[in-house]
Amino acid sequence: MNAATGPAGQRAAWDAYVSITIGLLPVLYDPECEHGTDGWAQVNPRLGGVAVRIRRSAPMWDHDGPILTAAASSAIRLYRHGDRPALIALAHAMAHRLFLLTIGTVRPHHPNRRSRNAAWNKRFELDTERPGIPQQRNMRHHGPRHDEKGIDDD
Image 1 (cartoon, rainbow, N blue to C red):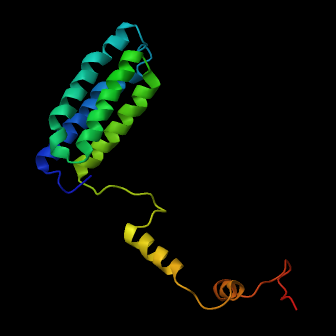
Image 2 (image 1 turned 90 degrees about the vertical axis):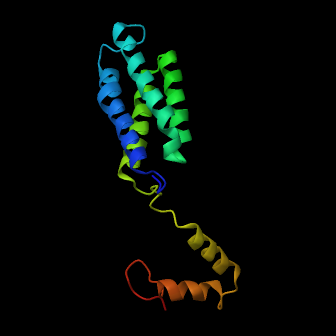
Image 3 (image 1 turned 30 degrees about the vertical axis):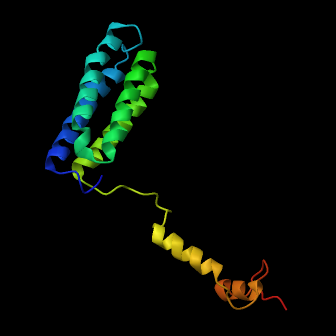
């Protein structure tokens, strides 16, 4: 998710991604995996393996390393509390972020969000005086107003 993640970081992210998607999530989706059962006990070594991989590889992932380390700690806490739905959701979120690290993309942004420079420039434009009264400016942008039937008002 950033340019600082090199090939070794991408491989480590891929290994952690595979350990979540192939190792951890199938066990969590197993109907026999309920808190206090043998199925739930199978989650422990897999989750531990994911947490170890993430903690070892976190320094290679620049800003995403601490985020994933915190997510792994939260996943362990959710396991201890027996919150399976939340653990599944967190595992999916971690896998998504790890996958983005493997392909080396830039951090995705919200589609309606502008760059910081664009927002700053817009703010500057709003502070300046614009000619005309507000109604005239509105007519310039939207054209003359019509009534419901499409006939010009006279």
